[in-house]
Amino acid sequence: MDRRVYDRMAEHDSTHWWYRARRDILADFLTREAALPQHARILEIGCGTGHNLPMLAQFGTVDAIEIDPAARDVAGKRLGKPVGAAPLPTLPGVPAKHYDLIAVLDVVEHIEDDVAALQAMRERLAPGGKILITVPAHQWMWSAHDVVNHHHRRYSKDSLQKVIAAAGLRSQKLGYFNSLLFPLAAGARIVGRITGRDDSDDTPPPRPLNALFETIFRIERHLVGRVPMPPGVSILTLAEPA
Image 1 (tube, rainbow, N blue to C red):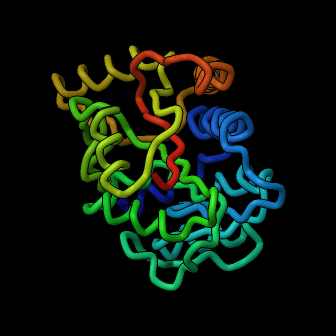
Image 2 (image 1 turned 180 degrees about the vertical axis):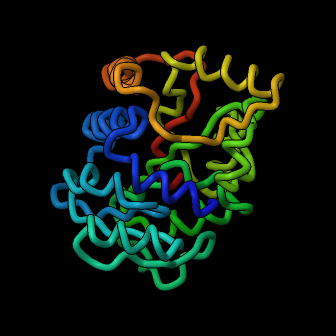
Image 3 (image 1 turned 135 degrees about the horizontal axis):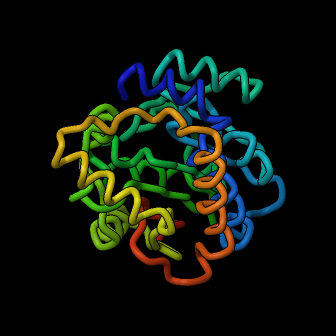
């Protein structure tokens, strides 16, 4: 990702509606669907500034990987121990058959060989382990946001399903989320494409609007994994060895 993306993440990941509500949605989803053992061993790959690490620590002992040095330093301070730098798709030095949960949250789209990346993760799972995956949805929504984040692609449900299967995994509860605000996001992308407006600025909106978006998005914690969601900005699934 561009340096400015990491800088904005560090500045806003505790206040921006998207980060705050998504953490709650993912925590509820893991509680209901992951069936993790007590004191689970967890690895987040591509942890950025570490804003998801306290949420994941609710479920066990967390390790983390981040290849950007500045973001890795911030994440290490949040985690309270060093964060690794093993790159995908090979994950050199990461122990095999070790983790009960691997979280890759908006990461797989950054990797050119996404199948090889998921295969490497599969090899690091302990028996019964799972991979929590989120990715951006709908290739037609490609924009400046994807460019500055160095994405290789956005996914459909079918394309993500095929990549997961090709990696020797099977998916559970694969579906959209960030659906309630999808019409606004889709409209903004279309308008931006027509007008040529750069939509890569991820700073929070004014405080009342930030609070409103957070409230609307957080409602999905009661829905994701329980009911089929209409098209959304993102796709979520748990994957396990086939």
